[in-house]
Length: 290
Length: 260
Image (cartoon, rainbow over all chains, first blue to last red; front, side):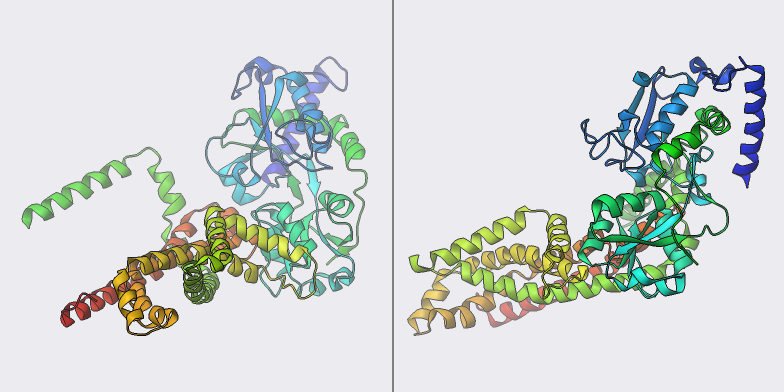
């Protein structure tokens, strides 16, 4: 709620700014207190970003082309999150060379305490509890959770949440996917919690769990690349507010306000939708499990 | 006595004062020492802890005997038994050298991936197997030390009475050897109890993993204290029991007036 009204105020502000600016719809850098020289950064003149290693498609791309990054290369600008990051950096007035990436494990990103990065992106969903420890940007994607299993597993025939309950599920520790299982699916056996999504996928492959819950875009990576005979059982509805992905800032970060302005400009001028169309076009609607 | 009391008060008082004056103390207290959460989460984590208990009881039962077997194999004399001794040495070196968590991952993720029908896929099973393999290596070295610490005259005397090597081992050497190594055996048992926390890496929700799940969900670290309490709670009675066992054994030895 707070984020929605905050977002509305910012959208209005952004519209006013855009109207009073040069008049071109995709106006370049922000001005005033969010001008590049006035931003509060970890290293002045540089935008220090971070994500998890390995970073997976379709959120990241570019292949394994830069050490120590495995699977994808955040510097490539390919993949939805990398593209959004560079689009935001451009709005803030940074060139591509002024953006650096550091690997930080997902579970460390939303812990309380000072951070080594200006902001972090790795499909981190906003939640009230996390918001008390860190600060989130406004949404750059509205995400749905989905269920993956292997062909031939009885779980593949499930058509509702009740049908999913008797099975052994797993998800990555600390994710909203895991929370979704515990809070809304409520399976009869306690779901397994893995340190990384890879371990969860391995367990699925080994038959140690029947299904894993991940965000819908990632299910495409799982079924296309990671596990040959994996199938998407379906997607889940949002319970309550839409689940949104936000960039993670340390508490009371002054940079957040400016990044939010940049994000809102990207929504307003259609860049966000264009990037989604480019990188997440395969994400259609799967059968909805209720 | 009065000086001891005064000194203790002064020492802990100063320590407490310094800690609570630290700049992050309030935050620390909020994060790790939330008593309401401690009470609320205790039953749930204790329930998950039962899985740890199950694992270490099963593992320890197997380790005590397997390690003895390994130690005996390693002490077989003569060139004809060289391959067996060599294998025992390689086993002990490998499983003490590789970190336990690595063995747990290799077996827990690797073995089920073979896809062979009769190979179990249960992660708890493979984690227990991994812990057994690792601790057999450590405990066999403890037994070996115990066997070697028994004076060779004991074995010589037994053999000269006509006992075979095996009988000498069984009736003369091992009873003494095992009694001597009870404290180090307990040490390894405690180590095993703690290492059951590593099982969580396979996704299994035991005490530590549940702690991590709760912490990630609510950003409070008091759950760590709950898990720590549970682990310490099983260690202390065991340590006191061992002390009693050793004391009883000593009493018996001294009472008979013999060096045995």
